[in-house]
Image (cartoon, rainbow over the protein chains, first blue to last red):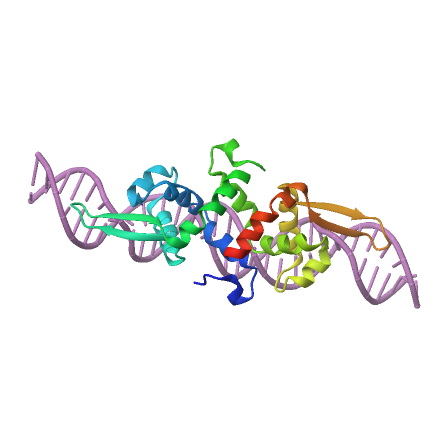
Length: 101
Length: 101
DNA sequence: TCAATTAGTCAAAAAAAGTTGACTACCTGA
DNA sequence: TCAGGTAGTCAACTTTTTTTGACTAATTGA
């Protein structure tokens, strides 16, 4: 998984667009900007989605260093997803996309 | 084809991300920022692409008002694609994507 | 012990996106 | 009139992405 398009001689924008695209990623990103989210909460918020879809999206977003997964060791073991430092760096551009979309 | 995500109650960024994504669209957009392009020129510049891929991408980008198609009535009839006004509006955000990608 | 909640995994099917190769149509110069 | 360049279309195929439904595993409260 590359983090920089220039390293493969591609169009760098393409790399980032690919990381933010997909059926559920933009919505996950938007929700995670506001506050950390847990798996089932996300599942309930994203109508029409399903466990597999979210698991895939979250795993990819974690691999691409967009979100950070944290295990919270309380009673029924919560797993929290929040934006990573790189993810936070992308907030302004995401907000621009929201404005122009 | 919608131009504004808010009109369908979706994540607005999602609409724009979808319009800019796809195997060839980012590269087409980047090339078209620099100067108007013709079909076969694009085909030659995008290694691994094919007529169908480009025809699809260009048609969609035209429908989404990202590029403008112009028929140039010279000898062997050229067709030129350049950024539309809306497309030009997106240049800054695309350049940001290039920087961060 | 049983049901519910947490957060997933797995395999298969369905849908969407991308590729391939043949074909069309117009115009021009030889 | 025939070859070559322009810009495509079409149907079939392959690949990738997304969905569906069943299943797992740990923990908790009744």
